[in-house]
Amino acid sequence: MRRASFRIATGFAGTPLICDALCAAGEPQLAYRMLLEKDCPSWLYPVTMGATTIWERWDSMLPDGSVNPGEMTSFNHYALGAVADWLHRTVAGLAAAGPGWRRLRIAPVPGGDLTWAKAAHLTPYGRAEAGWRVEEPGERVLVIEVLIPPSTRAEVHFPSGEPPQEIGPGRHTFRRGWTPPATVTIS
Image (cartoon, rainbow, N blue to C red; front, side):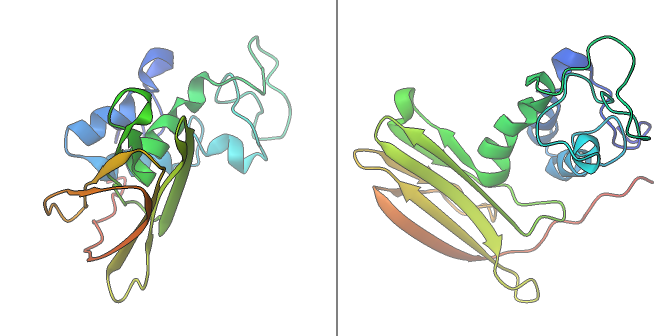
C-alpha cells in the first residue's frame, strides 16, 4: 500500500476485502488512509471528478474531464463500491449479529480524519441506526448513538476496549473518553 501511495492496487476481487483485511491485521488506520486517498485509483478519485455513483473502472473519467476511450466505462456499476459494506459495518459500526437482524452488533471503529459517521438499515423489525461523533476534539469525547428496533437486542463494542454492553430496543447514547488514533502518512 505504501509503495502504491495508498491508491488501490488490489484488483477486482480483492478490492471489497482490503479494508476488512487491514482491520483484521490490526491496522484500521491504514484502511482509513486508503479510504481517504483522492488520486486515481481510489474511492475518492471519482468523487473529485463529480461522481455521484460508483464507476465500473477507477478512471472512467480522465483528469481532463473526458470519458475514458477504452472499454468498460459504465458510470453506474457497484463492484468497486463494495467498500460501502465496510463503511456500514466498521466505520459506523452497524452489523447483523444473527440471522435476519434479530441481534445487532454495534462496533464503530473511528479513524482517519473523520469526526463522525452514521449508518442505518431497515431490518425486518424496523430501522436500526449506529453512529458516532467526536463531541469536542480538544476534550477527546466520543459519543456513540444507536437506535435498536423492537424485538431485537444489540451488543455494543466500544473503541476503548472496555467490555461490550448488551442493550435492548430504543435510542441509546454512550459517551466515552477517547484518544484519537495517529494518522498515517505516505513515508
